[in-house]
Length: 244
Image (tube, rainbow, N blue to C red; front, side, top):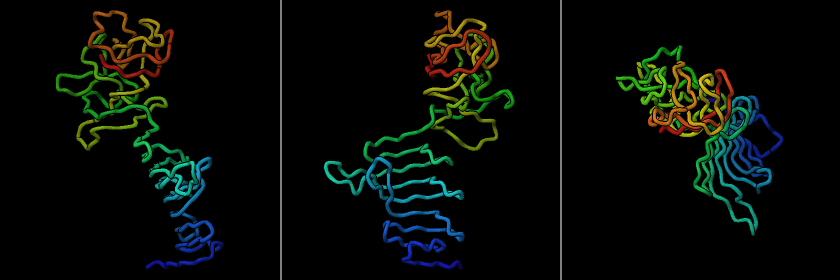
């Protein structure tokens, strides 16, 4: 069994558990004296003292923060509620549960759902426009104004899915399709220049969208609205998913 040391000396770093009376913290270190878990209080920048638990990864970066904000705040600042933060390796919060407001805050952009696909996995990459085949699976779109259009594969550019639904193991190739929110989409502006706000539909260029210029054909085949412009050629632009 491992050795467990409990000491009161805050200057002794190489211990299993350090009780720091000055900072009112309980600190759990690894065998090298590197902090991995902190229970107690710390400064919140512009916020009053925070109270809770921090978990660190092997590099000493905070990856989980659980606590109660502003527990020692003096009037007129009211005490804060609980919160939970999950952080990436750069100490940036990617998921936050805010007990004060009841909000769930996600750093990423869209809500995606996984679907089986009948297309080769080598053809499918983030930003690809997909349609529904006769078996209810997805395939890379290749027809103009296709009313079977399903959406765009999530994850291109700097827009990653904030939520992925129906993620499960399968013998089929499964892909995350953006259902709601902002996503980067492959487009072909050789058919027509694309401006911000233009409605987009499927094109005959595999996996690419184009500007919907024919309103009668566009009904039921619209993918979403362009959030960026492209004058000509093929490109990858952010769009707002709005199937119509």
